[in-house]
Picture 1 (cartoon, rainbow, N blue to C red):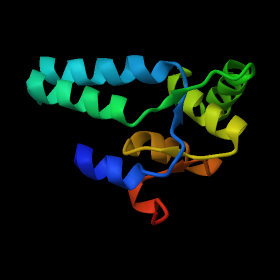
Picture 2 (cartoon, rainbow, N blue to C red):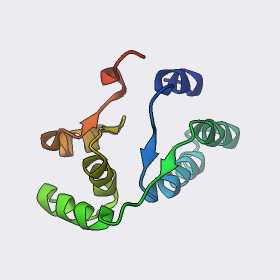
Picture 3 (cartoon, rainbow, N blue to C red):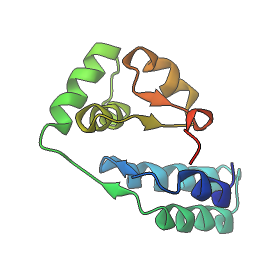
Length: 121
């Protein structure tokens, strides 16, 4: 799904993420440029498109405690992915991802969906 299609598909949704989100996106895009998987111009376009989505960064008081518990329950060594799941649990919503590894690992939580599961707007 391209940037324009993603913006269209997500129109009307409240987009939230934990504080780690911006660092992870920046890191992933930089890594893709470094590996020569995309050009720097493409990475910059993706960063601009992401900014246009207006993702609200949230850190509820219990985010990190809930992330710790989820990471423990799922057998995760790190809590980064668990922060997304924790925010979804705290806010009673779901995580939208194209990360198949996250989807498989968190399937039993019922907190993860992929773009094909978005309800038509």
